[in-house]
Image 1 (cartoon, rainbow, N blue to C red):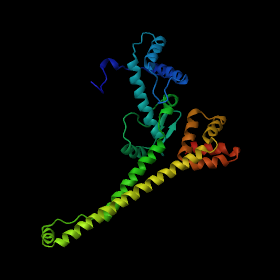
Image 2: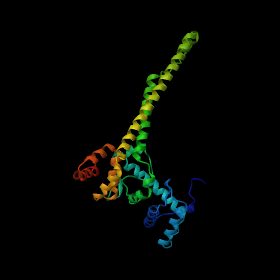
Image 3: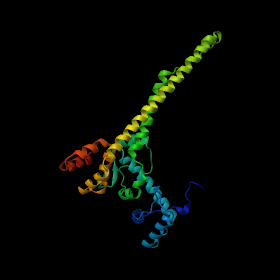
Image 4: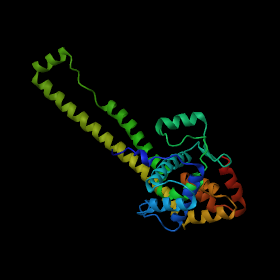
Length: 283
């Protein structure tokens, strides 16, 4: 049946098998084995299975096994990635896990429930999967901003609507009064039409303001990034300081979330930048 795995497509993976599979996929990605859309080229899963059979003696594995495993890893990676792009979450390089306080995690899961990855639990493959899936993941903070804008718009609309539109009473006395005076009925209809029109205008204004805020945020980020290939220079500078891959990613995410800070960074004397990086990593 569609949506369900055949029993023969399921298998239990050992840590060794996962490690070998990821190593093979890293090589495929490095050789350009992914399409511009982010998906793997046709035949990739069968190729990975074939290479695994060469490297691991007596292993029974198919391309479908590989495809299912990659999907589960991608779901897990995406969940961890989104957490790391949210304020309050961090990365423990010793335990190889996303870290967060129980209080923040509880609030986060109310808005973003997921069963693919649990924070504070080891995820040793995450840093390697950045190479495999990194370019195929939307920027978390931009997606979050759009969602927040819609949430805010909904709250403002509700408040504006209830303030400007009053539901007419339908009590027996009111009905009787209306039926006895035709002019009163016509006046009531005109008032309702006016109130509905007013509410529609208010909703439109709220939506326009929300879109203006979102456009302004995007413009700020674009201005910061496009200024002379700032992000490219940033990556080179960070690597030159001897930071490991995860530290470079964390600092880059920081500037992505706070584009104004990138201007400060670009204006700093080089001797101050290591202390700036230290302060970011200690946040």
